[in-house]
Image (cartoon, rainbow over the protein chains, first blue to last red):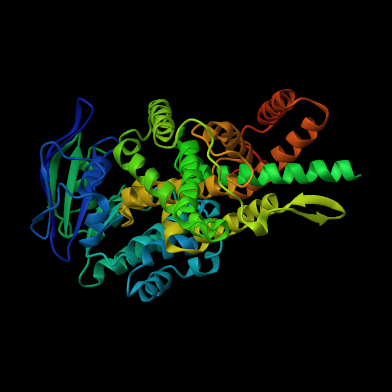
Length: 230
Length: 294
């Protein structure tokens, strides 16, 4: 589904990702694990088109999309939930969702499905997103991404900095999504146990390089944590 | 009492002119953060559009009605041309943008001078906009009343577009987070061009309105551009309701200062008031409340 091939990324002259290969199989879940500053978010930003790989290639369904802008990749079935519960703070929750539903024939139906996944949002639709809690904003961000009708969902630390009760809800929602057919997931996550329970493949990234990879289902949390030197 | 009402009307009239000029800036400066010093020249282009239409059509009334949408188109296309060729390369470089657009404003002034000549040209007001109407026993010129109505309509339409339309949501989304908008499937460059088109088009409409009360000449944009920026800053960056209050507030204040002082002294007093106000409330009349920084 998604292939990152020999991806190098630099901020100015400082290279922070040094030739990473990651493959997300169709209907599969690939998880990227690693410490803060390892280059995980940078890699995802390159995958969605916010950073240019130099050199390196991003392939979506075998098509080279390296030169495409982010919105063009969204049209090809990629959706991105960035780190930090990002929303459009001055738009209401409803407007945040309507924004991506606009112009889609199935926009209304998809909005309904996304709200069914996070029913708590239904009560908050009229509230400005900037006034929601971190957990509510994260649910809104995932719902917004789902309305675009993705075939590949990229999630960057979706449970980071969120109160534990909401973390469980979000994890359950992500697991439910991964069980649906027709959706591949690329997940960056700090909760190793949860990440491995969802993963078909995992990658450990350290200092901008892949230092370990394996089958998510077969890996033990302890072994992966040891590989990450936690 | 009549004197007070007279000055109040003068202030409302000046405020509505400021509002019309500043409304486009609330989009291009307030929402997009672009300091476009050529905004005043888009206004001038709108005024000359009214002049050209009147030369072609003859009838002042019909010409005014045709000139309003046409000036919106002319101002908008000039804005898109400027955004596409220069400003899009200078985002997040405000000083460079200021200098480049100032240069463009000088070029446009000279262009107008070459095409239409340095002296002011006459744009006749239609018959139905000549004369006065009495409001509470004090006369209010029909032309100025028309500008007040035009400003109110422009505010209502722009607010409705931004609040309720798909384009409005896209504009607000791109302004708040360009990267997030792009990764949500929004073409931010196209949205920038549309935003600039609307903002600059509003300057064109303001130009047509100004032909009713001011002379149409190549430097007319310079007269209003600084005051329009003041309105946007004092109202709160990107806040239309703030721009409305600030425009009428500054207009009325200047009219009352000008009653007892010379125009220059009134202007100085007005600037001092704005400086003092911004010291107390740097974010302007209105600002945005959020629970997070994102």
